[in-house]
Image (cartoon, rainbow, N blue to C red; front, side, top):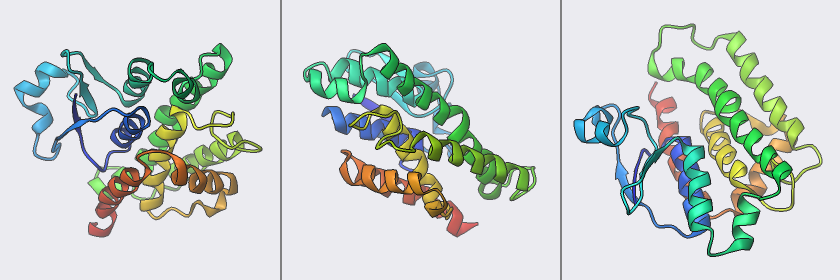
Amino acid sequence: MDFYYLPGSAPCRAVQMTAAAVGVELNLKLTNLMAGEHMKPEFLKLNPQHCIPTLVDEDGFVLWESRAIQIYLVEKYGAHDADLAERLYPSDPRRRAVVHQRLFFDVAVLYQRFAEYYYPQIFGQKVPVGDPGRLRSMEQALEFLNTFLEGEQYVAGGDDPTIADLSILATIATYEVAGYDLRRYENVQRWYERTSAIVPGADKNVEGAKVFGRYFTQK
């Protein structure tokens, strides 16, 4: 299946780790946003929202939004291994609800507040650079995550990493390459080190995050 992506994108890396976890090989289609490749007519036909990651399955089914893609990959391609699928995306309604909450927390709070604080610094947006209010908001998001992990091995609880861990792992790797010191959040640091050591595709996550990190060395 075709996968339109950028290696530096945390959402793209979350999908890559999920694909690795269920044994799906992605046909990588590097999509240069700076060059406007996402605005080409052929891409707009696939995804009128012109965003990445975008997945095109072998039968032509198109899906975007990384967390939706993660769920799709597990539900369709993890079906051959019920135990694996159950670990990544639990079927129990309450366990699944917590996974969803953590995924939504990632997209709406943890990664969003990272972007609000750091993106103006690297992309020259017309908002205060290093704004203390945005810094405090970002740190509050990390404090929430640290609380979620109190007494837990993984972000949605349980004994195994879920797709929520993969999504948040990509986000936290991005915090790290931005130079933010995660050691202030002991539970987050512990979880990050543990999860990075065991999940499939974690090496690609680190490599891609380093690509994003170049923005900070070039500014």
